[in-house]
Amino acid sequence: MSEPVEKKLRLATTSLAGCFGCHMSFLDIDERLLELLPFIEFDRTPLTDIKHCGPCDIGLVEGGVCNAENVHVLREFRKNCKLLVALGACAATGGLPAQRNHLDLADCLQEVYVTEASLSRGGIPNDPELPLPLDKVHPIHEVVKVDYFVPGCPPSGDAIWKFLTDLLAGRSPKLGHGLISYD
Ligand code: SF4
Image 1 (cartoon, rainbow, N blue to C red):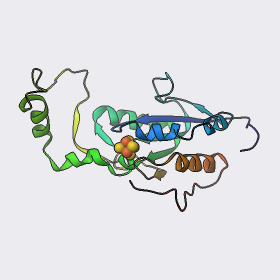
Image 2: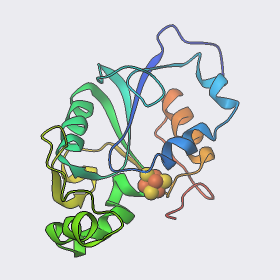
Image 3: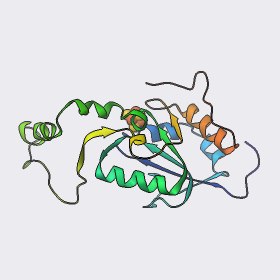
């Protein structure tokens, strides 16, 4: 990558109904993170202590949408990020967590919190602080417009590096052979 730019691109990331594996893969770009730093600054991410997404150039979203808080955060990202990116299989399709879409939500909660004796601790949680689960797990494009999809569970560090460096160079991101996977 070339000389530091005058204005850095501001980057936000979040994990909705994700497992943080896509973020771990982002960190898998390893020492190249240091090469990125002259070109980007972080807004809200699990790596910073910023609580709300402010105006950003790029928002990377890991995870599908499984509860009311996910919807709120996703809309905040869409409102503030010029480019919104579905990072990984969960954001793009709902991923493995969407397997629960074949089941009845009330049955799932009953099974986990009431029927399963080893987990039972006074019934289904109902504290108003807890976000209400949605009936189904949704890919993020069913809630907001998405500009780019980076497939994989997770996408490799190399794929994320190529994607970001293409964007930083002002190119349309192209992952190409060897960087696209769906597992
Ligand atoms: S796509 Fe895979 S690695 Fe990424 S959040 Fe979903 S389950 Fe985790």
